[in-house]
Image 1 (cartoon, rainbow, N blue to C red):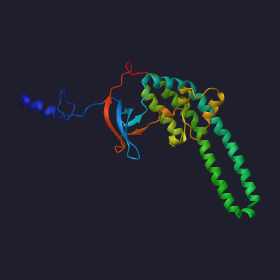
Image 2 (cartoon, one colour):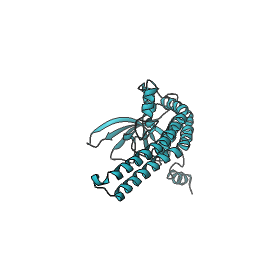
Image 3 (cartoon, one colour):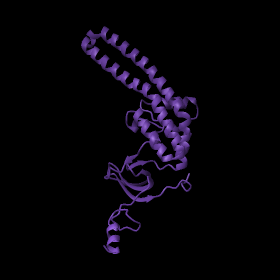
Image 4 (cartoon, rainbow, N blue to C red):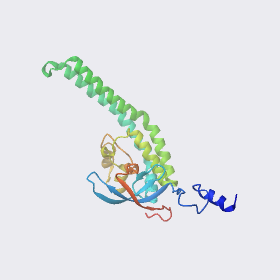
Length: 246
């Protein structure tokens, strides 16, 4: 076989040698900053800049590496306390919810003639409410220590590799909140960062403001490039730690 034939056969294999033909697949970095055209539900298009995790196509807020690392430091210091308080809160909720449900059961039972409800109907609703409350609160009590350990590990990783640490923290918080919508939540870390939390009263209100509470909502994915109808990449930019703006 001639030398030209060998070069030709190697060149046809993607990534076989530098300067291969256009048929080869480009190897992209794990993280990139991308400029996107985003189309909303009303078919309006606007331009945004996000950070993409190329292996999964997941999009995140375009915080700088320095900002994400700083937030990871805050999380490393606060997450053990936060999830200890959450476990205590949901332990108390078990007692509180059981008391309220039991009181309502006996009240409805005593007034069933005026309400037209049967004992069976009252018992079935009480059992359903009690089961849902126990399931919800017990999960948060039992899982809190394990989630706290995972978030602590992700936050420490974020001091070295900010975007990867953010991804781990976001995943652990999704598990704890049972993948419920971010529309039902708020971000304690962002509130601290922006100065909205000024005292202990603001802090305690933020901790237990809603049923779904992400300590770092800003670490959650914004979307996925799998939704090609909504997102279209028009520019890619490399991310370098020393050059990344604060």
